[in-house]
Image 1: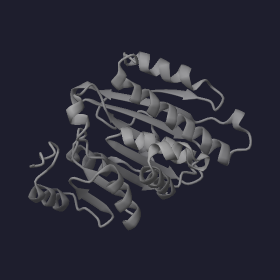
Image 2: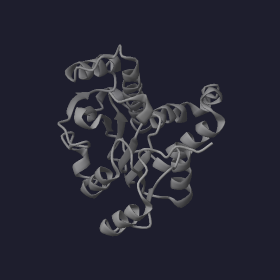
Image 3: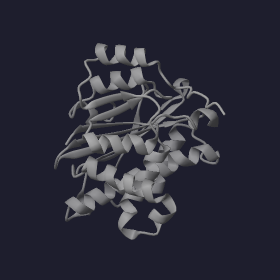
Image 4: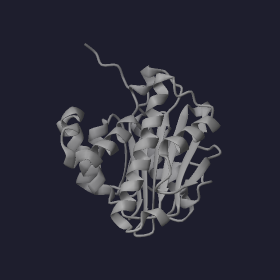
Amino acid sequence: MKMNKNIFNLDEKFLEVLKNENNISDRILLSNNLSGIEVVDIALEKKLNAVLQNSIFSLQEKLSLLHKIDVENIFDPDFPIIESKPKFFDYKFQDDRVEIINALFELFGVNLRYSKNSELYNVAQELMMNANNAILAAQSDQKNVEGLKLIFECNNSKNLFAISVIDPAGVLAPYSLLQQIQSVFNKGFKQGMSKKKEGAGLGSSIIFNSCDTLIMVIKPQVSTRVTVVLPYLIAQKKIDQIQKSLMIIGG
């Protein structure tokens, strides 16, 4: 039986043109047809800064974003990821996550009763929990922690939604996080859930499993921003063919 070509695949010659036009370094891989776990595997094996594939969030847009991002401008909550206007809330460690998330979704008119939007909610929850865990690891007095931000961005014309969390800890170790994701993917989600020691990896795996693109930016001991670009209001057929990407900046 003949396999249908992924609708997001790019011609290999065009990939070469993009590599040449963008002066792609040996720590950035442009590819086609990599599964999510293959993206993680190759990033770990070669210690890559980015694995980029064409998808709902196009390869050209990802390359443009990669050229624009640096470890200073990305921590401005108004910095656009998917070419639209971000909205954000500053919050404190002890604030009610559910209340904050619901308020931002209400600003964007997102119907959380629609089953496909439940993944947006889950990703926002997991990102905030990961940020709180980072604060716990880095700060002795969590009540006085400032600088936490939850940022939403929606681009209806591109069928994309971006969710970001900024924390003031700066303790994220991106390749360790990828190793946790790798472990959960290899063992399966159900088995991962039964292992307490893999709890952090499970949350990050849920995030990666839902995303089009995962972006991690680190200013060590200063701040971390994790951004997840997700499909939004688009047919399941296209969601099923998403080719995942990741970027690691700083650290």
